Image (spheres, one colour):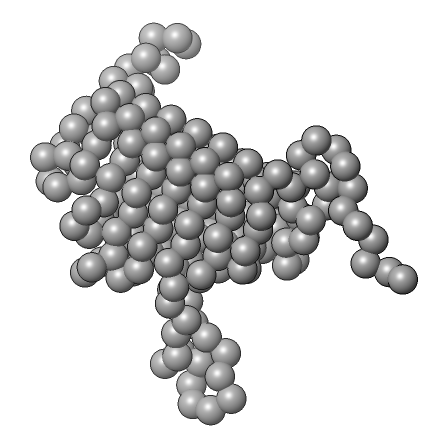
Length: 186
């Protein structure tokens, strides 16, 4: 069992070296596992010790780019649509399986066809952030250092650090230290 894991890690490091040869800036000991798909724009980087697990799709085009900090990982099944925007993920970020992250998405409009209107904006995720399984992050979102987002939450807008968030849309549940948010009722 351990031998199989070691071989997978070696293959993942080799795939990262190939990605570096193709233009992605790749830190030491970074891994791109088999089945991961990376399409990157100029200036994209995968930090030292970071891991893209199986079936992660990281899709930037044209002037779009991403920066993933050191020791961060994206679990299997993550779909990150960057397009021509910019995605920044800090250091020591843990992203659970099935993440859906959109720097561009269809927009709701009063006139015309929805498929012809888009919302496009950069996304920034700070350091020491944990995103649970199947979290969705919408265009323009900012998740500050030290935030935790519970499984299946939808992030839209700005999430200050030090809080655990959950729900649709994501709202503060309690501080990371356990303190409750102020009551919204009078």
